[in-house]
Image 1: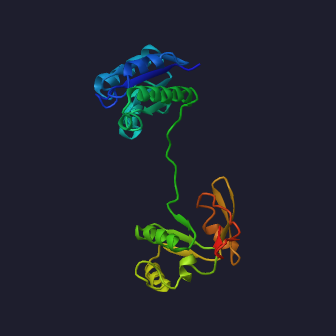
Image 2 (image 1 turned 30 degrees about the horizontal axis):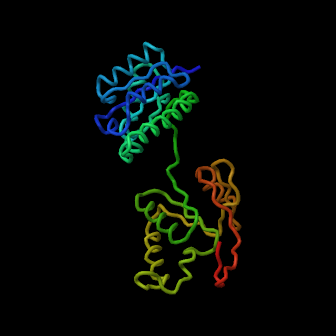
Image 3 (image 1 turned 45 degrees about the horizontal axis):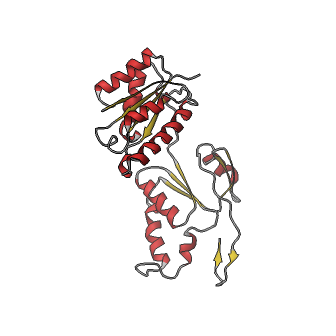
Length: 265
């Protein structure tokens, strides 16, 4: 059984203007495993932080829910607060009732009802939290770009310009994708070869880039991809698969003919 503390912030009138904060705190006290629920004008202030730390120790809380502003604003603040009180920092849940609720709601009845719904969900989520530990691991900084179309070329170029070693993988023997088949391109009406040449030439002068054509992603297990090269599988596998985690990619879908004769996917 968890022991949850809920702390609701008024944020001046930013929240209190469209949410009945005291009523929200009273509602929180009726939820399962909630042993203390309080509201305060500014929960991020020094008195507000001290209130949370005092209640963690007094009520032996093992979960904390702060109902306030966006976690982008003060999640790190409140994590530090509960950690200093002896609680694992990842046993904190932030409920955003300012940006996601108060600032976009004008009716106080609707605002209060939505705040209760968000808080109710947060309590059930908090009951399932488990303590985590932070650790530092070695990460290979090299990047694998799958697909040698114009988007893949541009992404690889941007990364190579930062000094990052980039592997550009393309299943076909040439790069450029569909764009290389166009006669003219918008908005300058330049031919595709002219634009692709401008994109490709910088790669010739950088040592942080390597293009691997005729290579495709055959299957993916967890987050590690198996790459198949019809030319030299062993070399490519030793270069890439031992170090490069990538997301699974969508399988190819056969094209279908549309009424106007164009191929669509």
